[in-house]
Length: 129
Image 1 (spheres, helix red, strand yellow):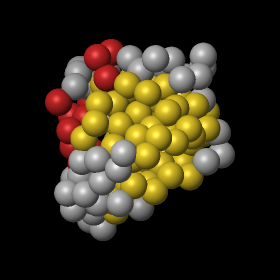
Image 2 (tube, rainbow, N blue to C red):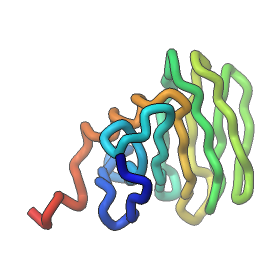
Image 3 (tube, helix red, strand yellow):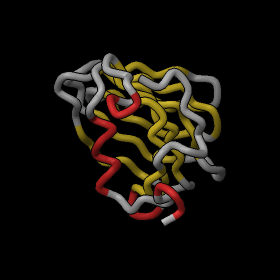
């Protein structure tokens, strides 16, 4: 169990067709079994296609930028300082609409969905390899 994970040591993956990255801070591999935490970064125009997490709620805290999200068919614009709750089973998508990059802390209550990011290229291999 790790109580502290420095972001520089956390695995970081290229996502969204090269328009973003996901830094996996907390998840079952660090001992966090009830939830996971990811730092999500997307460039202007970056998109997350519609998808669903059947058994995990998603929580976002927007640190920078703005995005247009669709959650269960409802469009909502989110920006710096906003918190977003997406219940388990809700279809959702996002598109960055700000000129600047979008950054958010992403939490899954019920970890697992963050593992999809590991299908991307790892930007910072362990031990510099």
